[in-house]
Image (tube, rainbow, N blue to C red; front, side, top):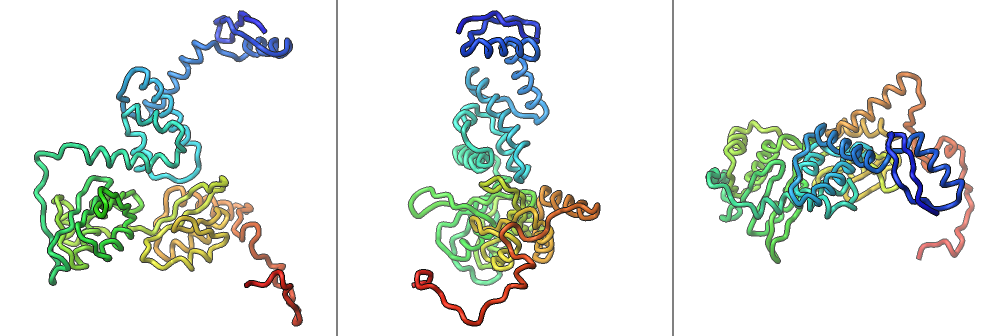
Length: 363
C-alpha cells in the first residue's frame, strides 16, 4: 500500500494511492500506461459524451443549481443509454415526455427508477404541472354538444384537450362514462373523496390526439350525455363526422421480468378477446393483457390481422425479421415454446383402467 506517480496513456501523470498485492499494483501501473486515462481526462471525456447526447437528442437545458444540473445531466445521459439498450417497445411520445422534463430535481429524485417506469412518472409530473399552471387568458370558449334525444343528465361532462392528454370530468357517476373512459385506457385521478377526473393518454398507435378526442366526445354524446368542449378543431371533427376512430387494440414488444422478449397484446375491456389471445402459443395473462414469446410472432401477426390490432414499429420489425429468416431458409422458431405440446403426444395411449391416488384428488 502506498502512493505512486502513475503515467497514463493520455500523457498525464497522477499520484494514485494503490492497495493490494505488489503484483496487482504493478499490473495496474502497467495497464494505466497502455490504455488508462487520468481522472481529469476521464472527467472531460464524460462531459463530452453528455454534450454529444444532449445535442443529438436536442435535450432541453436543465433548471436548478449548478451542482444539481451537473448531477442531473449525468443521470439523464444514462437514461438515454438505457432507452437505447433495452429492447422493449416504447412509443416516441413516452420517450419525449421523459426527456422533455427540464427540472434537475426531478431527474435526481428518480435516479434509481427503472427506465421503463419513467414514462408513467413523467406523465404524473406533467399532469401536476398542468393542474397548478395558470389558466390561459385567451382560452377558447366552451362549446356544448347535445345528444339528439333527451339527455341522461342535465349536468354536462367536461372534456379538456391537453395533447397528448385528454381529461374527462363528470360530477355524477354513470356506468357508461366509466366504461368509455376505461376503453380509452383512461386512468382515474382522485382529487377528493368521491371526486376526480379521468386522464387519457394518446400515442401514435391510438391515433392523432384530436381525432381520439373527437371519437371520445362522439361516443359520449351517442350515449346520451351533454359534453362541454373547449377545442374548436375537435368540435368541428365531431360535428362533421370526419374524425378517424381511435384504435385501442395494440401489439407492442416488451421485456418480461425474466428478460424475455415478448409480444404484448392489449385491448379495451369491453372487447371479449381473452380466449382468442390466450390460445396463442405460450400466451401468459399479465395485467389485463396477454404476452406471447417472440418465437410465436407469426401467430401473433395472424391474430393481429384477424382482429384489427395496430402493430408498433418494433413489432413490425420482429415480424419482418421472422419472415426474412424463413425466406432465407433460416431456423426462425414458430413452434410452441419449451413445455408446449409436441407431435410425440399423438402417440400416447391412455389406459382404459386407471385410478387416481387418494393424495392427488381435489377436495
